[in-house]
Image (cartoon, rainbow, N blue to C red; front, side, top):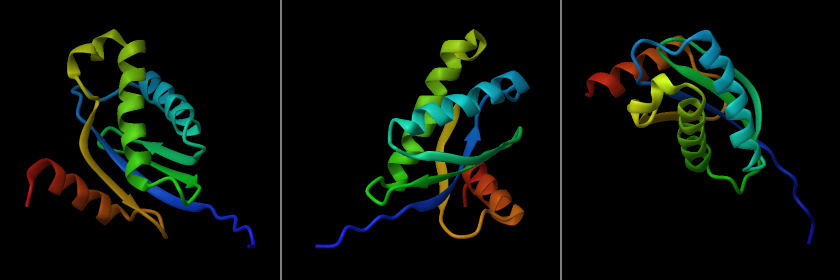
Length: 124
């Protein structure tokens, strides 16, 4: 039987729920924490963009790692790392909302991100 090697690219968007927004030091730390959390799954962080309203990252993953596992690991792992490093976040529970947007193919458009934020925060 032939061996098949495959990597899938996923784009993932998370919504921070802390007010005031995360500081530059926090987002720098979050990026490194994200990289470390994803490596536990054999998933590589390809790029990221953290703004006040959303955190978007692209990963390269083997096909046996489901996108929901990637999103869950990123959301919970980065939240825990941020709270461990920055005491002011301790009372927040999760740093990110439980709504996550995952897609393959082309990266998110600005309109897709805005619609995701609106639907996540305001509902239908």
